[in-house]
Image (cartoon, rainbow, N blue to C red; front, side, top):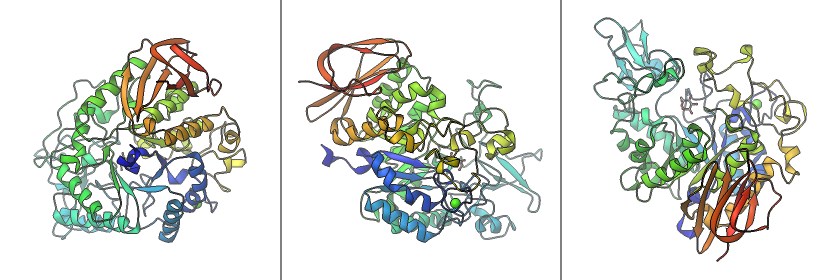
Length: 531
Ligand code: GLC
Ligand code: CA
């Protein structure tokens, strides 16, 4: 069975937010050399690939998601030579490297936009999305920016509005202009030629907008004062247009110009049904669109069970599943579900069918760090303060050791460290058999050794209350996964017998079980079934 699956199906992806991973020159900002230094750790942990959030030259209004040169390295992160060294060292350890590719927009300081805004006649004018004011002089339509306010910015000098789905410093590119597509596909070639193994496509559903720029309709489910203001409208015209799939197919075409199995992963926040089209016709789109359901669903066994079954049923033929518990845009799982359930969540992530993506620091149980007002960095928090939308709490420095600044930097860290870093850190957890880190390492090891867990089939098991259960199977080997998503003890009845292969509490391995499993509160178990 394993030979029929590619590395991106069998493997586990680890997301690195480079600013926060390891600083090697004391400027308080993580760098590429820092990632290289920690490749041994990642290989030891047992992941298969790293996805590195952007490190391209940037004014850092959105911390690298505002790019001024897509084919270079920002000096704060290092040099292209540092990148090549990172890639070579990763490959030498069998680790794949996935980069962040940002097709939807550039920084306003990108030379393309500087030209585009210089005059209406500039040859690059049409590289971005410029529109006249509406009849009343206001913005061309009702679209809103992900970070608050209108998605349109008035340009006094040339008397038109330009579109920015994100910050006003992140103008949207016009992918309907063939020169834009050509230039951006060259960027894909640049990194592929250097040897990267894949791309995560940032905000890819936004790259094509309605050709008539129609108003988005109101979202009937929107709760004023409760929901993110961005969700006030259904974003059916500002993105997720049918035309986007042809563009993704052409990105995929560029990957095929290169040898080896390279991967495209779409970042798409949308309803599950809408995700499925991103696999593309005959699988010629993304290898998989990110599935963020575990971040968004209530942490309840019945809700998650239903969502997993539904997702599995919706997948198109050949469509490979994937799961995510956290990333640099969402509050950390340990804070969302609490430290005890974070262990159960790790077991869920690493035993569901499909490629898991693990966010840096989650493997040691890092939690959101409260950020004092004067240290806020994230523009979203600055635009819409106090709404809990800010992303700094989940972007704080990786906690390596109990040394000052958790061993992250010899200087002043760009974001504060968690108060508890002397207790919660890699060095301290490495040697503890029942630590969160050891749990991750054991799960990754078992997954790697057992095709049933890496690529096997998934069959839901009926359970009650707070218990979530399913069976994974390959080549006649079967594992039952039983997870207690509640804090009280619970029982799962099942047909058959086996023994505990791995438990969240690390104290029952090898114990035989038959027809009923008694789970303690916050306990999860992987059971190797007999016969
Ligand atoms: C994606 C990124 C996010 C960024 C936005 C704009 O959602 O994950 O961090 O702010 O795109 O590029
Ligand atoms: Ca640095």
